[in-house]
Image (cartoon, rainbow, N blue to C red; front, side, top):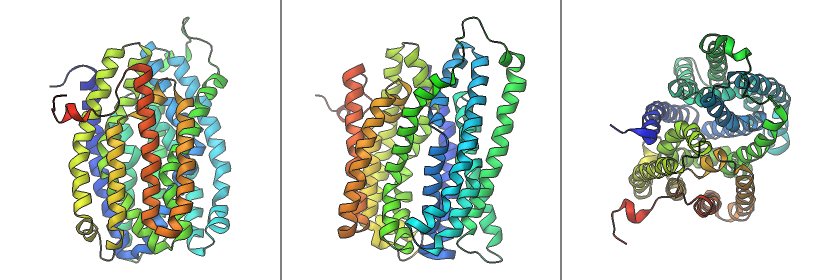
Length: 440
């Protein structure tokens, strides 16, 4: 059995992986269901709505969805329960208010940007669920910082997919329309907000109890401004990084029809199957990297990062090969008429392979105090992505959007991995010669 820090990451990542496999199955079940019941147009509306919801949630979280993991794991290791409570209270108040304000932007997205009545009701549903989505996201990341992986991963995505799939299945006997997938996703978001809030309440009231109200002598005075200054680069990074991953969907949705968008977003969804291992390991590796780095355990940190990188790449390589060689067959498993996206799927599969080979660049930079550098790096990559999309989509369609993502994603991964190695002599990326056991 694996021991030590990587053993902890592997076991925690294994739990997350199981949840994500279940979530993946339900997610693809929903995609197939929507495609066959509502067609490509229905699938395009659903995926565009979720992309916009994700961007608004990133903004509403103020970057604390990333920094809260670092601080909770850091404060827990030191036993600073008072600081944990003050941090959570301060974040919860401010993100709730901001998310409510952001909810009023739904009509702007539907009417001013996309200029079609098809998106009005789905975007209004997005606005209604936004405050609950922000609250649930903050709670999930707080719970992850406590290393309660089985809880955080269930409510991160699996519960949403369960509620959505069950609702769509039951309503299919009576008739579905374009708005129902968003409606049931919203129901899952509401339940996630309620139950994660209950978990956090039990943590403060039962697990640490009176200690949450007693400040230890060694604890510094809590200062929200200090935490905000650390989190501001993270909000920019989180938002820009998320936007960089969605800008192709947003921009292709502007240029193309809802039906073409359905094909394009399905190619993206199919390609991210290679990303499940890195996402699963990131779940527990994020607080572990923070803990090891700030405890100055560089040798153990290097082992965790390297072992994780090899595992991620060894999973991604064969999956990428299947997607590149048999894209039309993979599309046919979902529904007929999607084969026009075969080349797009091939390109996105390569995008995910590059991400896997680079390793945990984003997590490492955010958890080790390099969030300002990462913000600048991803900002440049996103600007490049937008420019390339503007140039390539009108001429090459969905393939152009995919190539733009490949170039911009490869840029920040390669530059970020090189920066980490030069500064810390830690290799987040995969050493292909070592993986393939080829002697130098």
